[in-house]
Length: 409
Image (tube, rainbow, N blue to C red; front, side, top):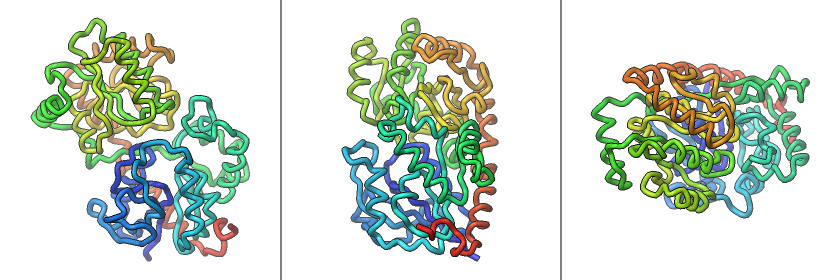
């Protein structure tokens, strides 16, 4: 029996959108077993090759994926005046998309609530602690209307047959908030793409170092700290820049590489200039997964300055590449790294404290560090984490569509 599983999310699997959610979806597509038909109802970044409102069967890696783009998006990593997370479900309402025989998978509450697509079963992923969505540091616009978001969230929880939360504390909080759904809410530890993020050989690392040094005009003989992710408030790249500047004051060979894109780029460049760090801090822009893995392979440590996280995939990717992590106290970070061995967590959320953590980690790196970090990531491989999730899809895919919440609209 073939089970239809359709991910309903505003992204293009073959496009340039970066983020933890998109990384998870791509991994789920790549590793799906043959008895599960993987589908995506999303958006297209290339309407010439992937035209709007037409089902296509395309190859994603070695896996067939059935793709239905609702509309086209030119620059998915830039914020728009009319948020994409609202555009997408509203346009979905007029597509006549038939998911009645599919397990519909949602990574945000809005498409589940506003698109009103009947499905055999609904699976909702909540990435992080729900309360963080409406916190002042959140980049999500729901923070301006927290009570309205809570109403939308409550309806999404009622409509979902399974809820997976990428946060242990968030799981407990949701179970208390919605006791009637307690048995359907589960913690899900995240995973990383081990086909791409892996320990590189010494020669491979050096080739990548020289190639990127030539491409972005920095000294390949230096030591490198990497910041990667969206340049938005949640990730707080300004804090990373200030912390690095303090640590770099006494280390002339230390450089910071900034990978990503976002609305804070102008402000970041101004801070770099004010701190006198031009030539020490380098803007790489958005990198595709293989490029990011190559950079991780030759850097000395990853610097994370997030206000909040769930279980950050980026940290797992870094560890898999042998890269230790210096981080703020964010999400499940302490459950992933071993203090002083595979990483250091800042004692306080300040530039000075994060700089001290960075200095400590740089001093503790030894030849064995890369191998130790890589081994720490092994329990989070797709093979170790995804089999149980696919079993849930099989279970829900065998349900009678007459019994699901989705058909109630």
